[in-house]
Length: 548
Image (cartoon, rainbow, N blue to C red; front, side, top):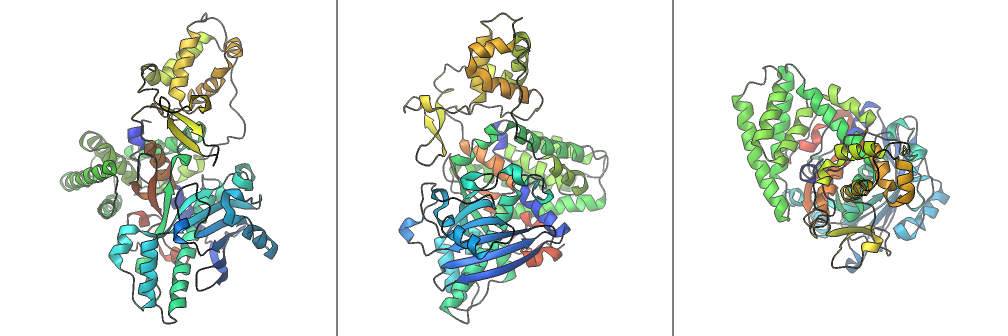
């Protein structure tokens, strides 16, 4: 639970995109484009319907003709190339008109509890234009350009869980297809990808009736980009029970694989195939950020070492995966170690995949604080769970350099420099380590046999820490064991940790505070699901389409 390691996580079998695709294939979901009223300029409305067998969901898409000077990935943007809502069921004409009046406004509009998500996306202008030009001329787009960018549009937000009027998480948490985390959001992105490919081909057709369509090979290499900034970072801190369940599932999966006594030849072959796929993924991973460039270069070296290991070491001995894990821990960079963790899960779907069922968390009621606990017991619990924080000199300006706050303009989290800006009075409780150390020091002024209730009555500023302590005492992965306001803290580590659980690939930080990623790149489209492997696509290269 250190940020350096969390900022090196990779997607794995437990990632939410893969969870969704496995369910789609297993339950034979059906898909239909029920409306596509879009003109030659790419302006109009489209509906994409999903039938799970028990329920229907519909992506309502609005395409706009956005002037270039209004296109921005920043959260302060007020216009986008496309805007979307995922409707619960089949929308009526009145629903579509209601959404048309609100969805293009995004935060300035309101949806209803009949909608599960709200989203928007912008074109990757250079690639979008070149693809239309190529298709209109009757030829395929330049493969190298598709490989370099990886998407035709990128989302800048996929809102859910009650934001802007959408249905609360509690309203859908009992649905089996949405029980795993972020399934409605992943379904939204999956359908957006389908719409984007339809839209670009439609616009090429408007230029020339003889326009080509994108070949299946290249189609699969186009995912959906995403630009994610500080708005996502506090999530891991604000949801300790949920994050514990994510990490615990991942650690349990790793433990199960490491405990395998012997590997079959089929399992070894599967592992080696995924290692080869990982090489393809790393070779196509482009980043403009100096830190990430170094990490990717080191990861490539790590894969060279991994290749040597599996060529010279028998994987048919006793507990071969445990031996491999131990070797990686001593021989590879943190980035390489975490890739190995993901790769080790690949041959063992029967051991790993059921853990998806325990990755959600009921956060509808607050954790109870035991006011009768003695302060000596509380101090012991703080030492056990926040010992790392008690070793930090919080009086140091470097240790207390930043402050998290919420911007008044966009109601989005921000991270400011405490000693340069007047933001301390607006600070949000997003520094659990510092607050735990402060509570520990405050308790030292009280007698050890007194209880927590009177202490919190006198010092209510520590109530949130007492509540987190109650969670952390039972959930070993609830807390990030690092200083979230340190001068050298990299918020992109928080972003990557969460996005890896989404299933994102090709992390490309643009600063220490925002990152671009790719989602569903290589994934089968609805018409391909029946004959495709719903898991291997994340490691596919430009010349590979994984079969079932």
